[in-house]
Amino acid sequence: QVVRVVRGAALAVVPADYVTAARARGERTWSILWREILPNITDVVCVEFAMRASWVVLLISSLSFLGFGADPPTPDWGLMVAENRTAITVVPMASLAPIIALATLVVGLNLAADGLSKAWGVDRIREGS
Image (cartoon, rainbow, N blue to C red; front, side, top):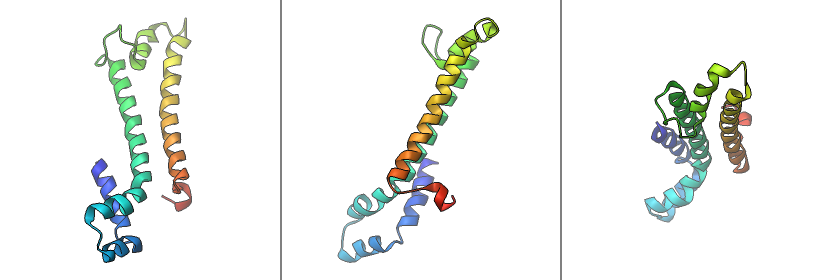
């Protein structure tokens, strides 16, 4: 699926005038890919990476919460929540701290990717996508 997203972004860049000019200059395919296309799809790759990384973190934590992840001596946020959920009325921070850390990581990854894409000149909100 990542390949499909990157391919779609690259196909949107290929008809641009600077790619046509590079072809007219006689540049090789790899040169056009590295100098013209790749710098213009880096923001899409960065956002896709952040979304996939967030998804993986949530998946691993969910599997650990269900008991399919790391063994109990290993520190894992999903395992911490699962072990401390029976005592949530007595010590609520034992379960809330890993939940807050997990949410902070996921939101931070997405905000960092959005910040990088804006720094590279792409504003998804302004473009309407």
